[in-house]
Length: 346
Image 1 (spheres, rainbow, N blue to C red):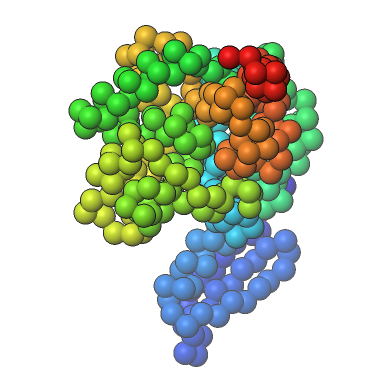
Image 2 (cartoon, helix red, strand yellow):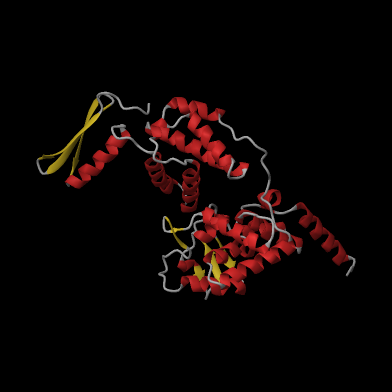
């Protein structure tokens, strides 16, 4: 599997009556295909040659094919997140997909482990294993590699939840972000969103102009990973006018935060700006997901129920919110405040 057979070939296109014929010799059988135009026939030949390994399929080409498959099977956000993982995990995407072996996967795991958290590498590895199984089904990689995938593990201690900011650090962070936003830095505008709105990186980066509603007071989250993720977010005044400014001169289908990555920005860009703001504010460096957790912890610490916080974050239930987002002491503080209010402690 995954290698060209000696007698496999594609012949054509050539005129046959009023149509263009293509002959495919594969797996010891002959197949005839007819097309109305020569271009349709040529496009079919390209696909057929790639399927039969008559032309080398690169990792990049395989990822592009997989993206089309994912878009037909799942929600847009899930497809985009999957392709983001694959694009980061495979550093040399010019390599032929049938040359991918266990050593290459293990090397990529080590490279990624030196750059990002263990949990992130584990997610990328799981996604890559699923992708390679799909490639094996297409005949692009050997079944032997699939059998070896279970042996590849991520080494390192996995943590629950990302590093978060304290209350004072959150204030310093927000001040630094506002100063950058006022100076015209788009990155600082977007870096405020996970902390103030509690939204995921992709949820802000994938927003179109039409999602900014009611004169900038509301942001609609659509096509989320789950139905619970589709929600209406209120925007505070400190952020509202910056987002309105980003929408000027654009059509309703344009991205609010345009970029070169399929017309939008990559999540790495947002995390870079979160790091820049942290450095300017003189606080511990966190990631965008850590700011989302900070948002949840601060909300819980002032008495907001975990169920309401879960709904604001777009979670199906509050189990994940409790385990990965809300710090334990904020739950204790909420309980203490509730007790104090009952016995009238000021």
